[in-house]
Image (cartoon, rainbow, N blue to C red; front, side, top):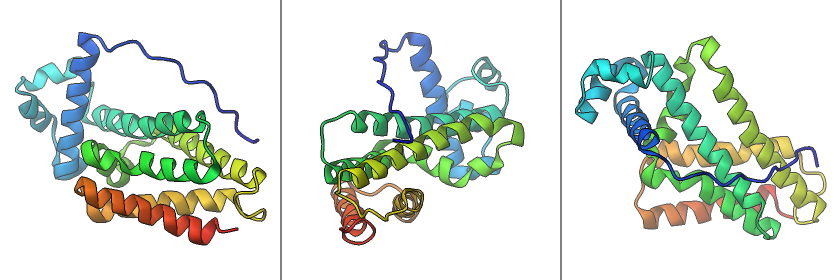
Amino acid sequence: MSVSVQSTVARKPAGKREVTRRRVIDAAAAEFAEHGYHGGSTRGIADRLGMKQGSLYYHFKSKEAALEEVCRVGVGEFADGLEAILHKEQNSTERLRAAVANHLTPLLDKSDYVRVFLFERQHLPRDQRGEVARLSRRYEALLRWMFEDGITADAFPPRLDSGHAVLVFIGACNMVAATYGRPAPEQLDELMDGVADLLLGGLLRR
C-alpha cells in the first residue's frame, strides 16, 4: 500500500488548561461560522466566552491564529476518526460507510468547524496554511489507502483511480455539509446512507 497506517496512540484525559483552550477554540469556530472570517472578531469570540478581549491573547496571538487553530482541529479530527476506522476489522463496504459517517457526523455537534474549514480557510495567510494543508493531505492519503485496499480485496473495480475516488468522496460529503448545514439526526442518517449508496452503486460498483 502507498500509505502506512500508524497505530493511534491513546490520549491522556484533557487537563483544565486544555479544556479551557478547547472552549476558546469552540467560540472562535462559532464566531467565524456565523459571521465569516472578515465579519468575525476577537471581541466577538471574547463576548461568547464572557471574558475580556485581552484575555484571548493568552490562547491566540491574532485572529489569523484563531482561524488556523479552528481549521487545524477540524481537519485533524476527520483524519483521526478515519485512522481509527481503518484499524477495525471491517470489509471494504463497511469501511466506506463508516468513513462517510465519520465525515458527516460532525455536522451534528461540530458543524461550526466544518463550515469554517470549508468556507473560511482560504483567508489564512500563506505562511499559516502549511499545517492545515499537511493535515488535509494526511486525510486524503488515508482515504486513498482505503480505496486502494478495497481494490486489492477485489471489493472495488480494479481500474478504479483512487485519487479520483478521493475527490468524489470528499466532494459528495462536502456538498451535504454545504447544503444542509446542521441537519436533524434522522435526516443526517438518510443523507449518510444516500451518499454511501451512490458511491457504492456508481463509482465503486464492481
